[in-house]
Image (cartoon, rainbow, N blue to C red; front, side, top):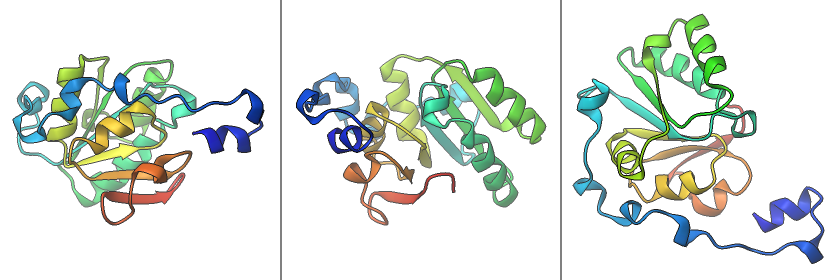
Length: 171
């Protein structure tokens, strides 16, 4: 993130690296196969599950999830997407999903405890990362493939074609 900040105008003499690995909840370091499943609670059983954990704010590019889900549903009709988190764009997401005819496929579950989130991302078939911070670290620790925008620092953590798929932002 340091290089990103400096390349976007931050003064190098006022910039430092702040490590936040200790801010990741310990449950994310646990074996993903032993985490509590949330599929029954979501009512998705064995349906294809896409998940993302993010603040629902414009800076996080979360509205793009609706376009992604619409395209996935065209190919995989029973797919659902669970988006954990909350913010100012919740109603925008609901409206966009309604307009796209996929409102019943987008599960907006709000803020959840870390144990629940760890279960969700381990349960998912694929994770989305439009613009994530700590949630990208948690996603990578889940063992679930990640599809991420080539944005900010994502490629510092993800290895394209090995730990997930990196795509151009907006694709």
